[in-house]
Amino acid sequence: GAGVSQSPSNKVTEKGKDVELRCDPISGHTALYWYRQSLGQGLEFLIYFQGNSAPDKSGLPSDRFSAERTGGSVSTLTIQRTQQEDSAVYLCASSLVGGPPWGDTQYFGPGTRLTVL
Amino acid sequence: EDQVTQSPEALRLQEGESSSLNCSYTVSGLRGLFWYRQDPGKGPEFLFTLYSAGEEKEKERLKATLTKKESFLHITAPKPEDSATYLCAVQGGANSKLTFGKGITLSVRP
Image (cartoon, rainbow over all chains, first blue to last red; front, side, top):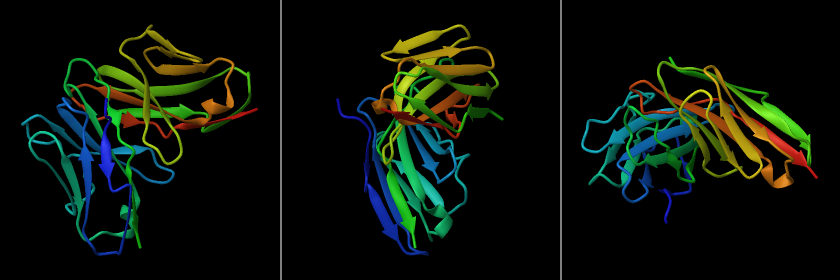
């Protein structure tokens, strides 16, 4: 079946502009995650959506970052007033369940490479 | 706070030379330990989930094992196509996020 898809695959923007990154999770997956991967850094968690619950925003680095998930499916990550340090690969993942007690496997999309000039 | 440390940072092997990649972790209430493979320019590809100490899983030339403090990814008779970055991550307690190590870059020479 279809995996997680993300668009665009690459985005180049100028400092100060806003950008929107899109994620389509695997059909039927109720949990959706955003991560960021910077050069020399591991993947870092940004935000998590589970069903109709309030999202876990604990990983968002600043209030310039926000995300929404419409209809329990597609998600958009928005970065306002982009800065050069926002340059990274933004990865989306989805999973079937997303809650305790068992760990559930997250499946990743191909990522969006964001470059802020 | 959950922590994951992977070693070595990079590993170069000759084709057919077996080895192991290490993942040390600290987590409160382990729910799962995950191994992923990542090729350049691509997203992480799921390999294994381990849930409790003593568990082992195998897939082709790869075998993942888990203790209470670390996990090993054993690669038997590797081939050049096994060259990639291998990522380890944990999920613990009430957190649903994954905490990742920085990865191990494996290069297998023909």
